[in-house]
Every structure is written in C-alpha cells, then in structure tokens.
Length: 187
Image (cartoon, rainbow, N blue to C red; front, side):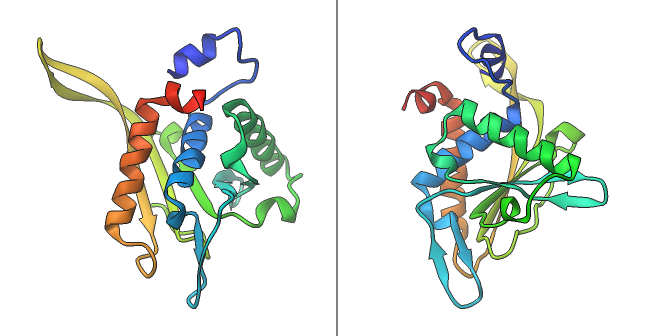
C-alpha cells in the first residue's frame, strides 16, 4: 500500500511508513479506548481524543512531540503534523507545550534496522507501541512456500490497568486495520 500511496497523484504530502502506522494507531485506539489512557498510581483516566506521542531521536536523547486529536486527522494531516513535529525536535524549535498531553506513544525503530525491541512506557501513559523493522517471512500458500513482508510489533502496557488480553485485542485490530488500510482510509 505504501508504494501505491507514494505513486498516487491525489496525495501531495510525502507519506512515510511511520505515518501509516501513526494513522492506523490513532484509528485503532478509537476502538480500544482503554489503552488511550493515563494511570498515575491512583486513577485510570481514559480519553476520547487520541493525543499521539511520536518518539523522535535527537542528539543527546529522545523527544516525544504530541499530535493532538490524531483520531480526527486524515493520513495526509498526520503526515504533515508528524513531519513538522519531527523537524521542530531536530532543529531545537519545539515548544514545551508541543511535548505535553500525550495519551499514547508510538516508537518506531524499524528504519534503524531493529527488528524487535521493548519500548518503555511514557509515564503516565498506560501503553506504548513499538514498531520494528519489516522483514520477509515464509508462509504456506497453495503453490508452496511464499514470502510476505511482515512488521514486528511490541506493545508495552501498564498491567495495573490493562491486562494482556486487552493488549492482544488491540494488536489484533491494529494488524487487521493495516491489512485493510483501504477500508480504514475510506471511513
């Protein structure tokens, strides 16, 4: 799908794989609201709006700018917001208010050649999604063994408020949404 998006005459914004994952995450969180939450050791607060944190590698560390109301944005809007936030972080122009209020974070190390990793929760958020590299995996087809590109995902959750089954349901829906991205974009 990413290849088709890049070649589309209708999409004028540069769309990265990370933008696709951010878009799918925001849409998936709308279906799994319990993960779009904070837990501050006393209270579990679930949010309607997805304020999506994007982990950004900068000299000397990590910054997490927030895309506000990501669930209401189109793929192109998320791509523009993500590119702007990443640029501001790397140029040192980001404002403190643009780093606050995240309800869920996505950390993508796939472009760095990392296949699997365990992301650390961004307190007080209740969950974080780690996106690893894309690699070919064998599967059994009618004509024999074929290969399909697969992405490695890792979900870290705060087990005080989210159990493993809830996390698994989120990941299953996320995978279904990626596989059916055309339907998700048509909403």
